[in-house]
Amino acid sequence: MDTTEETNGTYFYHGHANVTAQELFLLIFAESLANHMGVSVETAATILAGLPLIAKRKVLGAKGSRTSIASKVARQILKGVRFPDGMKVEAIIGMGKVRPTNKVGTVVGRAVPFVGYTQAVIIFALVQERPETNTT
Image (cartoon, rainbow, N blue to C red):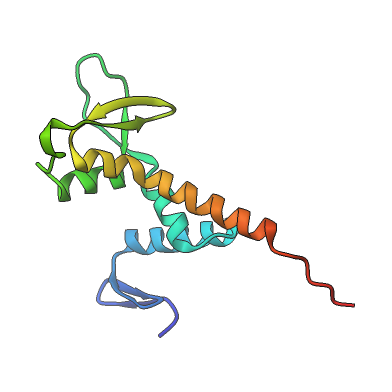
């Protein structure tokens, strides 16, 4: 079963069983992005997970801010986990803004896209320095 098949309203795709239509779309999108960029699927997935796609609730004075899937999931999984002794770590917000926080979930969620970007840069650097093969 290496194709997309529908069973009881869910799908099977490349070893992933019981996949919903939305999950199937994201799997195919991440795989297509990876192929287009010439990177691994994991790299494309971390970049996608870090994009601010989810609208946040409106707070007084805030205008249309958004958050990422990685940030939401990290905050849910690491809810209440803080760095010891009141230590604060600077986490990047948006394009270059830095804000200190002592919440581990916040730091992890905001770091995910940069892990993807770093993986992509490493892949591109390795491809660039790969010696040419002479076929003559």
